[in-house]
Length: 453
Image (cartoon, rainbow, N blue to C red; front, side, top):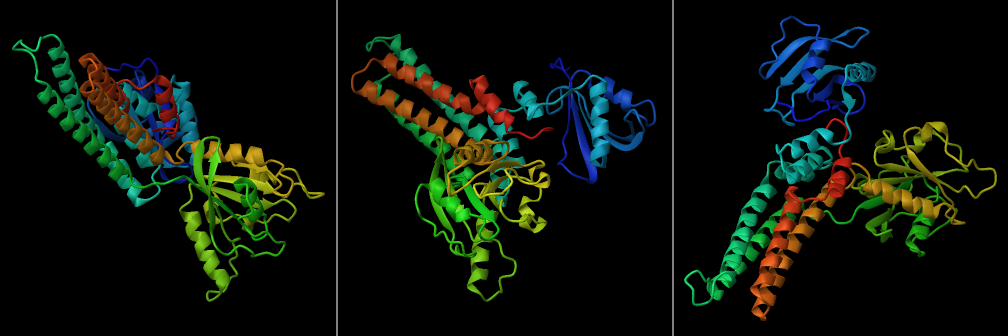
């Protein structure tokens, strides 16, 4: 049965309205809470997995309900799990979640359902990261990469190569117990041959992971906004050079400019694009600049949306991709000009991070750099890239320790040193699957998940 002392609940469907919304419940009191909210036909059979059609009592009324029941231990978390499929109205879902909490559930932390699956042994850490990569995928290639991770492609390779590393270490340690004249002694040639084979297997696993993740490059920050909002001046300020032409005349920027940027140890690439102008005619150079800018915005990890604090604000100042506030940082620029408000309108601030800056005086540039770094490290942003880097670094460390141990031994170091390096290689592989991953690393990984996942 359930191994979790608390029962967690969260809305698992995306924000906003829809035909259907989903609440997820998991833990030792799930069965009790399901029965307390059930308003359908009785008796409700919760002895086996099943789908039940009824109504949900939220304490104020009843809603149509499709209940998916997955009893322990044959569930994702190995606890009793229920999914409530309800009408996708945000107020109704909020009321339903409030009812679950009133009945004894606690609000789930980001990624807590997947973390419970990992802690219960249902999935290893690389598969848990596959869940994260899949739900944050923005392209078809990222979706496929996340599915490959979730399906256990990396975990299977790690398991196989780990067995070979451990087999080599057992051979080395067994050889330590015997003199060269004893029958139990392993010839040096055999140890070296096995070590070369294991190193090749590690390299194959690393190559598979690199191919799976693809070339994601550095995170991309794109400066977007209306013409003459001060994007190019901000680009120069952040880059520390005069790479972009700055002019009071609107429409100066036509090409897409880029520069490498270091945000407190986080390497990224900053792009300056033409100001958005829907009035550009199809056969004009301005239209070509608009197309270049649009392509850059579609590939961005983060939009730094620049608004001119000295100009009247209009709803048209926001492009479609910024309307939800997803992966957008509002830059309230030109606050050095006399009479300009120090903060954006309330409609702009609502649900969005923002920074007040002056590209001319330098005011707020430090805060802007910090905000950009926070946004790039935030939930969902660049998740696939960070996971691929974590895996690659661990695999490279495993290869390096094995090769270092082999080289030291061949140069005359005791065989014990080689055995220690092989143990370190195993520990590096275990970091990928989560067998020896530090709690702080787990916290950082699961904090990037959405609620309800």
